[in-house]
Length: 295
Image 1 (cartoon, helix red, strand yellow):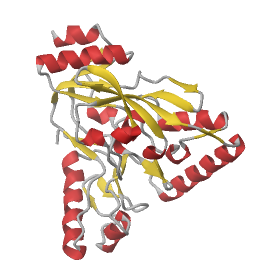
Image 2 (cartoon, helix red, strand yellow):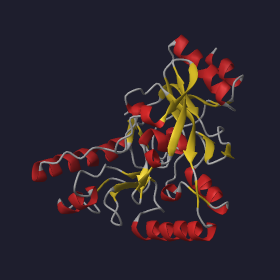
Image 3 (spheres, helix red, strand yellow):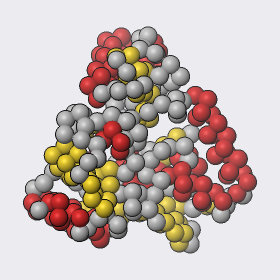
Image 4 (cartoon, one colour):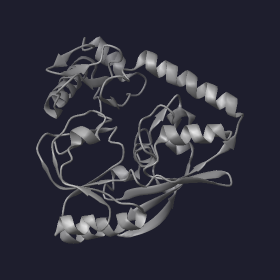
């Protein structure tokens, strides 16, 4: 019954796993996977699953997600097909599945400044809004004007003041069943050569300082006030530390990477060890930036 319904409202698979859907490349099998073609199909699917009390998880690029090895018996909904964007005056309308680097590059070519800070973040617009993602002293709260949300079965718009943005947080952390469907981002004009040079420089810096060639979920911990997580991890001697195939990156110690067949259990054991040792030595509680699911 579930399979037949989902097949009518998107591209359906029953042989997917989180290992192939996340940038960390770990996680177990999924009972049902579907990619709706548009936001109306998304609305139909979500309302059906809620009515039938079937568990579900909405994902984008899976770049900030760690998943357990046990089979998820519910439905994973991918927003990757919600990938259209268009410039509307001094704003850009972008659906949740648009990749941030793709949009940043497209806007820069037209001479629009907006997402240069996110040009190296391998996530979708929906995920970046959810996390209030940021880099290089920029963050989504700086550019978001409105967000379209699937809330309580209906599509509504919330303005930026209603989103309760803070450091790596938004209102969606308090309402996990609300789904970011699209966003309007503010644009300013700037010479395209300047923007493209800036983004190229930042990409070079990322390649030099981050393990972009290894499966990871990006920065593992939020930076505490007045310091950096990587400095604390270095101070307890955990740069290069590993459990089985999961390593604290020697290149950047706030990245925990999968060198082969790493598991969520190994990843989280490292996380908990780091948290305990940093708390014991410095009295600081490191908070995970990566989202746990089915762990």
